[in-house]
Structures are given as C-alpha cells and as structure tokens.
Length: 397
Image 1 (tube, rainbow, N blue to C red):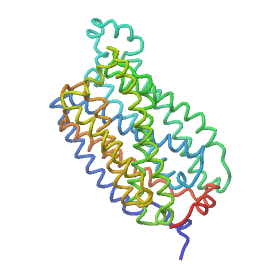
Image 2 (image 1 turned 90 degrees about the horizontal axis):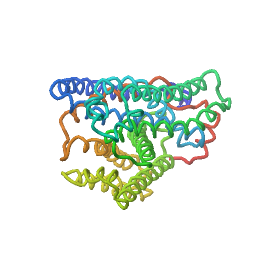
Image 3 (image 1 turned 90 degrees about the vertical axis):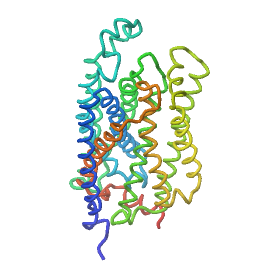
Image 4 (image 1 turned 30 degrees about the vertical axis):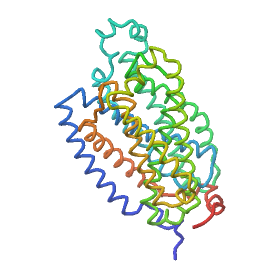
C-alpha cells in the first residue's frame, strides 16, 4: 500500500469538487436575486451588502491571522490546517474587488458621505478630515494591499517548500508573521472604524478593533472545522485528523469564544456604566425594537451554549459533535455581524430577503473561490521540516 503522505492522495478529494460546484450554483442564484434586490431597493441592498462584505472579508482575514500565529508558534494543529488557512487568505484579492460595489453605494450606507448632512452636524464637520469618501476609499485600498501582500508572500513560500525547498528550514515565515500580526492588528482596527463604527459616526469604542479581530479568528476556526468534517472522510486528511488534533482545534475554538464574549461584555459594561450621551445610544438601539431578542440569542447561542458544550473533552475530540458546534457558531457569526450594523438603519428588528440573497450570493462565490484555491496545492505541507516530527509526537487515532 502506498504511503498516503507521499502519494497522489495528497490532492483534494473529489468531494471538494462537488462542493465547489454546488457553491457556485448557489452563488449564481444568490447574485441574480441580489441584482433584483438592488434594482428594487438600492438602499437596503447596500446596507445588506455591507454586512456580507464585512463577514466574508473577516473570514479571509481570520485565516491570514491564524496562519501567521501558526508560523510563529508551530505545532501539529497548524500544520494540519495550514492549506485551508492559506486558501482562505488567498481570497483577499476577491474581497478587494468586492469592495467596489460598496464604494459606489457609499451614500446609501454612511451618513458622513452626504455633504448636506455634514454641514448641519458640528461633530461630522470635525471628523470630515478623516471621514470623507476619497480618503475612506484610499484607506481601504491600502488595507487590502497590505493584507494581500502578506498572504501572497506566506502562501508563495509555502508552495516553494513543496518543490524547491523540501525539508529546508525557512525563517522567512516568522520574519513576516511576527511584524505581520502587529500590522494586522493595526489595520484591522482601522478597518473596524472605517467600515463598522462609522456607520454611527457619533459613537466610538476603543476596544472595537479587538472585538472585530476576535470575531475573525473565531469565524476562521469554525470554517476550518466545517471543512475538516468533509476532508476527514478521505485521504490524506483521514490519516491526520485524529482525536488529539481535533481536541486542539476544539480548545482553540473554546478560547476564542471566551475571548469574544469577554471583549464584547467589557465593552458593554464600560459604556453602560459610564452612561455617556455619545456612547450609550448605540446600545439603546439594540435593546429595543426587537433587537434585544437578537442580542439575547447571541448571548445564548454565540456564547453560553457552545461554551457549555465545549467544556466536554469528548465533544472536542469527536468530529461530528465539534462540527455541529462549528455550524452553530458560523450562523451566529453572520447574525452577530448583522447585529453590529443593521440597527443603525432599522429601529425595529429587520432581516430582509435581500440579506438572505446576498448571503447566498457573496457566500457562494467566496466559497467557490476558497475551494478553488484549496485545490491548487497538496492538502498537507509534508515537506515542512517539522511535519513528520510534529505529527509523530501528537498522538494517534
């Protein structure tokens, strides 16, 4: 029998091709429905589009961040999912392209984009040097240029490791990943202000960038677990997705759930106790009009229930059970992104059909591109110098 770590079974199994085809069909149907929604209600389209742009960009950025963490920390958990993270990070140019419709519809999304509104508001006049459309677009272009460059370098060197640098230690990964994580933190914090916080330009939170980063890491982990549940049925992943390695991912997901809950509750507690007129309206909007029920659902299903379930080691070591938790968290991440943005546009709880259409459209196209990039390289970085040792020392089935 051939070694599954050196044979053609390192390639993506046929099940991924079928999944990609289905994702493309769903995406095209969603795009058609979204175009119809844009013609019927342009304002709602762009407001819903912002939610999807933030969520799917966040998945790509979460993959980039976890990939850099792996290059700094090492370990079998990262080697097992490196190619998944690389595929997610390589979708960043696609999300840069997806920014174009948002830039064209900026007036439907941000009040600071209207000169007549700014002229009547002293606070917006004070912020106009920063919050203006040309500078806002330029900053976003800069963010994506930086993120794409980091993703390109790390994924390119990883591919070189499979061919020209087999078994040779490569310090370039750490040299980019170390400063890269700092740059990631700064740019994502700035993007959080530009894309999300400026939806309500009178509100601010100094912890908001950290909230966004924690959400991106959690989203990338849920995506990884969901894909592993498919890949683990076939070689080569069937040989490496063991109970111990699933346990690692489950513990990491558990940590991110707690981190996200800690950051969001800290933000709420500080703002609520201070009760300042420039801060408290953001939460008052979300505690009325039906939005409070979505907030309660997030408390229960984005934190309490998955936290309680993941206390069990058996759940974290069982691919099916861990997949169910990841699926729940994936859905709640979409709803949480909606909760962050939509109440600024609707005083009462509103989930429009355009939200669903864009979820299918943007999500289907993103997943199609993600799986296409995944197919472009062997599923496991077997020529990484630490691969054999890390896998051998990390337990078995």
